[in-house]
Every structure is written in C-alpha cells, then in structure tokens.
Image (cartoon, rainbow, N blue to C red; front, side, top):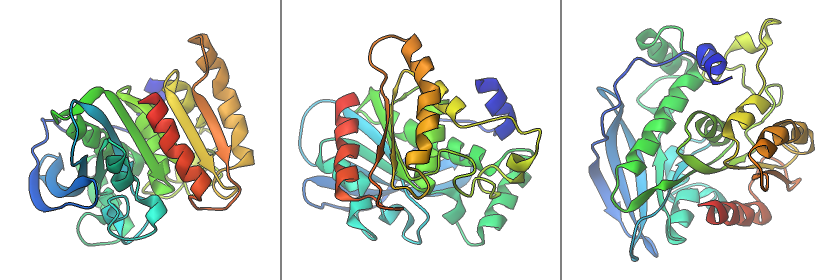
Amino acid sequence: MLKAWTAFLGTLKAERPRPKLEVAEEDRPEGCIRQLVRYEAEPGIPVEGYLLKPAKGDGPRPGVVALHSTTKNTIRQPAGLAGEPEKAFGLKLAQRGCVAFCPTCFLWVGEGSYEAHVAAFQKRHPGAKGMAKMLWDAVRALDVLESLPEVDARRLGAVGHSLGGKEALYLAAFDERVRATVSSEGGIGIAFSNWDAPWYLGKEVHDKAFARSHHELLGLVAPRAFLLLGGDSADGARSWPYIEAALPVYRLYGGMARVGLLNHGKGHSVPPEAEERLYQWLAAYL
C-alpha cells in the first residue's frame, strides 16, 4: 500500500541533511519562548517557521508539528500571532509543555499564485504531485524537531486544520516517527474537499483508473494514535466509514484501537469542545 501511494504521489530527489536553524526573531509570550527561524526544506530553498518552547522545565519534551490552514496569516496563525486564537496550536502546545514547530506551506514561500508555486516545484521534481511537496516539507519539520536536544524524538506528533489537516493525515501515514495526530476538517474523503487541486492530488483523482482511498492512509497510520475532528463541513458524520474501514487494521495489533472521530457539528471551525479534545488526545498519546 505504501509503495502504491508513493508511486502515485511521486518523489523528491533531494538530500535531507540535518536542519540548520537561523533565529531571525524571538519573543516571550506567557509561559514560552517563540522564535522565528529560517532553514532549508529543500537544498537551496530557504523557508521560515516558528519554533515555540516552554520557558521553563526539565528533560526532553514531546514535539509537535503544527500545520497552518489556508490563510494569509500562514505560520503566524499556529504561532498565536494572528488569526483565530483557537487555531494557535503551536503557542498553546508550548504553554502546555510541548515543543512545537510551525512550518510555512510552500504555497506561501515567495511571490506568485498557488499554481505558479506548483509549476516551479514540478519543474524541479517532474511527475511529483503538490501533496508530495507538502509531505516532504512536513517530514523536514519533523527533522527540525528531532534535531533539538529538548525534544524527545520518541514522542513526536502532528496537528492541523483544513489544509493543515490534510498535511497531518499524509505526514502520519508516511512517517512512522509520528506517534499521535489530530486532523481537523481536512476532508478524509477525496470527494469531501478540493483534493483535485493541483497543489494537492490533481485532476487524476477523477480518472476511472484511480483506485486509491484515504482509509488506506489510516491503515498505514495504525497502530499509532489518530483523531479526526469534523464539523459536518469537510468532515463529520460521513467520515465515519473511513475510520470504520481502518479499524480491522488497528485490531490486528491487539489492544485498544487508537483511532477515532469527534463530530462537533459546528462547521469548518475549531469550537471549544474540539480544541480541548485535541490537546487531551495529544497529551494522552505523547
């Protein structure tokens, strides 16, 4: 299954050296240290991210990649600098004792339209889908966390809403370092959201020959913890069959199946009950 999905997405032929972080800015919101850092996701292509760490405490901590949604605020959203406070996942995770890293999605790196960014990427990596680039960059964000002495590399997680929820799903499926994931309103079904956009999977998903489904990705996540949040917009009651289809794979490992769906029924949002369950899930499994 992993080979089939990898063949469909395409691959990046690029090196993955240990990330070198350059701190551009630093401030100290309540309870944590927030740094704007620069690094290379692909060799020669600089990108920015926010690194957030607890201000006090001992010992290696869980590390979580916090992926932003489609917003002009980009990484300022999960870092707690702009946008809805309920989506400030990185800031609130750091205030709860985790180290969080919030990378910039490639669609906002430099000038130009989404389509222009996809075209430039595919010129460097012919045949690769936009989601292959998002996956690569999310893997590199995990590399950043894993490289930090204050992070316990055995306790890595991922969280994201909408666009970020899509990225979190793929990161969890393709990288076994992710021990716990929360994907909010990404659209688990390919027909549930704009997966056919060129920056995701492209129009190929409409071809009769396309035989892939995202319950297969959930099977790849097993037995690791995965929570899907829905509001009956991109995800919700109609998402349950995807969770149900993955349950037999989880049960093969024995014990409790660490996969679930919370449908808050409040649209494409992160209401208080979903936000609280998000942090509970990550705390329980990291």
